[in-house]
Image (cartoon, rainbow, N blue to C red):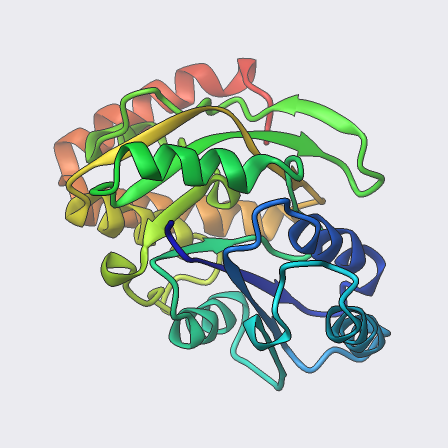
Length: 257
């Protein structure tokens, strides 16, 4: 079986962190390590972490060893710096980010991932679909960018077609996030992953519940600019211009998540 490093990044997200941790620790397959990176939160985040740590030590999640739970709370330089810290602490065969507010789709999901890997032990990427939820866990539907059944580097000309919470990446090909990108480093990271991956395995099911929250107009504009720059870096100017023309035409008719 593959050992999975599940990583949660959190900052002042005490309101939703417990649901994320519960969805991870309650997995029926316990062959994973759980790494939590907090950015020195000022709310009740540490109380929640220590509460779950006590439950793990007490044995409330049979089969999950306390040695496989590690956490740190310290200032960072933002989301992607914290994600890099998580990568550096990971020791599993695959890394999987499930950040505060997001949830693994069901307690059977990790078992399905393990089954897919056992049939394809040479896989570098395992991915699936995401269900979008709001802050009250109410489903909003699938992302308008549906993960393709055949995933290649060129798939990303359509944007980040695989939700970051629904892609597991072999740790040896998972590079650090580029901190020059403040809101779209995950798109750059996924491009680099797929450039290295030799085999991508699709699971025809939801892997995660991805929580959406409001994105300010300033952030949205920055995201567009960063994704344009990233696409140009990986695909060149002509393909980038063509891809953005198609995006502009489709944009009024698509959901914004």
